[in-house]
Length: 422
Image 1: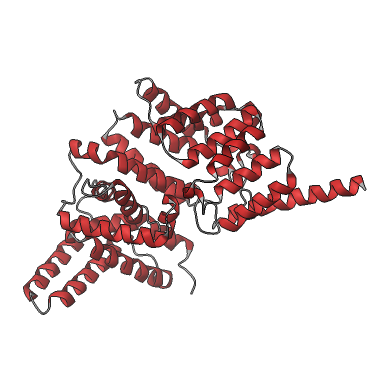
Image 2: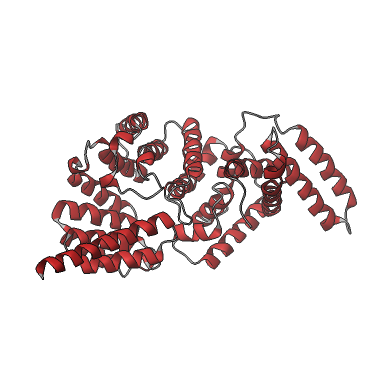
């Protein structure tokens, strides 16, 4: 069975978190609301390509999901409280009538903070929000956390039950509550953006709708909390990174690595906005993880050519970041910077210390970086093996094709060198 047409698929992705937020606000049951919204999305995927997209896609989805909720409650309560069904049916009518009653209310932002409720552990809050707000599959979330899919499924299920039992109201939290939930909320937005910028599964390199939604939501959080340095830092990081989007793929969707990108295609207005945000927040004196990552992105973006990149500065920033966080990906990035400053042998030595880190056991990134550094060191046979190992692990087709192309190019160079010697 083929999926919905691209325009329909884009609309469904765009509206899914908004619809879930609306249904949650009215019916207060996270798990049941999510099930109802999924059914509405499946109905839309079947009907809209045949019958056309309705004038109000969001309202259509909310009404269909509301009917599913009513049907579910009718089946559940028929034996006990038939009057509750009538109440929900009235609620459905009210819901349908109020679809446009609060156009200024960002239900996705409310859903974001609700999922980051302090009743949940930080990992559970982040996982639940990625599922509800980001629209990521359980497999994609497990990949982001470097844990098995079954483990992540259990974590998300428990989080839903905790939210249901907490009785948390569906509304924007107070300023005090926002501050308590902010760290988890920012981490969620960061992961949603990363998944959109380089999707973990699929044929395309990027999911532009997901990256754009992460930027939009981060802007909304920044408007709520303009004085928070890390909110500004995260928004700057997203803008500075997303500015390279058009140059990251070739005419056939193939991956173009940073050194080979046409920098004239970078979005200079986004770079200017990101640098301005970063400069203002660094002037406040406090420095956090997102600000440091944004600073790395700014150094890349401000270099006219790849050869002009200030690698010593990037290495210093990653060293600071590594001291702040226990994240093997940061160390992986520091290895690249170290190789550019001190030579590939130094980077490869740092990578050797990462090999024992179980969190990277199933990730293609370690082998991909190893292949790159081995290639820089002139160790082509070993680089080919590393690139092939990385290609076998990645589930993104564009990344796999790039890695296999690098391996094939090096093999061809080896063959030509052998012929020349003969």
